[in-house]
Length: 89
Image (tube, rainbow, N blue to C red; front, side, top):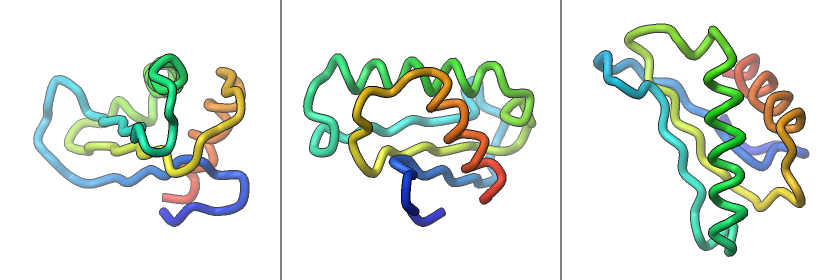
């Protein structure tokens, strides 16, 4: 999905084998400079995905890529963004 206004992350779905992990997260150092912020984004995104039954489907791999640095991400913001990305795919 192409990045839109207010979207600082993109998500793609593709079919694949049943792996132990069915999602991948990419937070480039070029976009988010501080390691603590990159780690926080990854933690929040992992938790949002873990709580959503949509991502528990088998045979699908989800890829998340941060395309712009968010100011101060909080869980509610990440969860809303994941919902919007889900509907857009």
